[in-house]
Length: 162
Length: 233
View 1: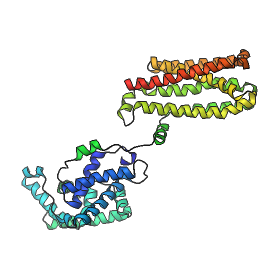
View 2 (view 1 turned 60 degrees about the horizontal axis):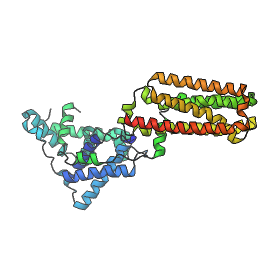
View 3 (view 1 turned 90 degrees about the horizontal axis):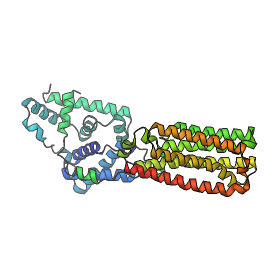
């Protein structure tokens, strides 16, 4: 774990990069901020911190992304579509269709709702760390997550999924 | 949420492949850690029985000073080899349990780990000697220097002989050999105190001093040899 100094750096790098890309929609900027996040984490907290490492990493990343918005006026960046992964190109029609439906359902959500889906279901951040990241209770996270999931599934049904 | 939807979510949020990841992870230095903190982490890996033996020896010496004050020096100098044994066996532990490769593969070198553990145990023993010394001085009516020499000589002799054995022999046999040496020196120290009191006269102090110096240097050389061996392993 990060808190024990023996960082699973590669895994966390990918997740923080994914989060930064979600916020910025720019590969170069997301990568720069991911690297800056790790440098700041080690510089500030090192191994002596009693803070939760995931909370620290995501908080640093979020703050750096906000700084980046201010510098480059990227406020609307999150609304830009994600590129299609290369692997998807040669897949069956059904999976491509599912992908399109899920994309459309995600796009219908607000940014903070998308962010919660990303943190919980894609980056698999524990509920406790999400609660610390947002500064709310675990029960509040459960409630918000349930509400977002419900909206997402409703959007999926509206798109004709399942 | 259905599994296929979750999988699809991961694909939806998949960013383009990062390009500088490998170079960054290679270049990123591991977080620094202070010597004190490193030593404290090693504290937890020293076996409990090592601490238990030290505490028992300390308690036994204090009890002896109450029940048999005239023999306190003999008792403490007989216990000293057992204290040295805890240091000796700790230094050979990674070899005995074939942990050397594992330890060298982790963040800190085996050399640092060995040095930290030997240092910690040596420091703990030193503290114990300092605590026991006034009791011995008071009960035996000796000078601090003489009392210190009488206790240190069997300790250093055991440490030197034990480390010498550990450097030359491998496995559990080496540990059993160290235990035998410690027991012999302990017995010898107790016997000499009872049967050859001339050895403890003031005119013999120079011999004790020479012995402490010789075995002290020998112990330090054996410790550095063990550390050097760990590098070559």
